[in-house]
Length: 361
Image (cartoon, rainbow, N blue to C red; front, side):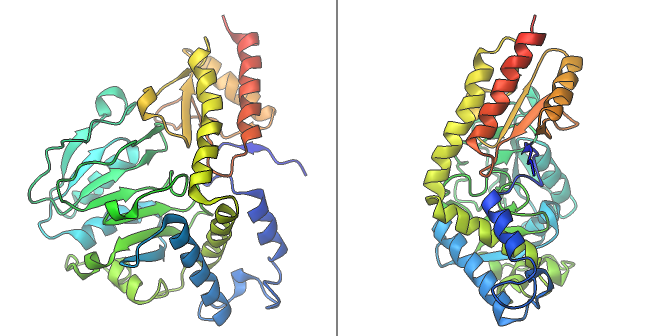
């Protein structure tokens, strides 16, 4: 069996050790005689799986006891609605627009109130993170909303917004568990699992307990209330059981590899291999300002879209898949999440050098 180097933005590469363990346990989980996929979510065996997953996540992020951890469904797109449904008091909030998904969240929030855009990098095709040190925070804002790492455009916040006392909500999907994060700076952190943590179908929410006492908007469905999920230990309905199990395996893999400080150092070293090459290449150019670069999603291109297409085609044939940039940006994107090995990035750079020698002018 030959595995490719998978640079997909999500669903994305998972650690081989995790995939192998899941395969070994597929037919018989720890002597239960059945797969986790077949197991009742009400069983003691499954309760232990979800409890261990939460405990390991709390260890990794040093989550304080006054925050609840929720394992939910519906993808990030449902969170665009759940946030205003659950956190609205004045029906207005401040949004920082740094890419496609922050824009989507803002557009969804307009259904439920009157949100404001207080900073944006749209003027330069989202190629940078705006200054967030002194934002025009609306005194009535229910919260300030940000997207930590912008998967499509390859940018990442290096410091968090000064919210002037307002609750900070963070869509951390594509940088989640790639580095340490001070949970106490946020009222709510949420992350779709399919980029850096597990399979598609799981959303992890970390919410400060006092926010669960907010009155939700009157029409909010029961299943879209954070409080309901918190009171029921993520078991109000059948959770994405198998996905949570795989996330739990990833958490253990991260702990066994030194936790988040170690993975951050690994990710920085890995990303530098690609960025250092892009900075000196005459054919390929990075598309993001240096001080806003993501460690997870590296966007680059040549001046000629036909050359970009040729590169993507030849790269795929050589075992480097999913390098095509998002349909809104063109060019290329290498998503190099935690599970992408260092040798995968080095092999890609070696291939790019060869391509440049043969196709550069």
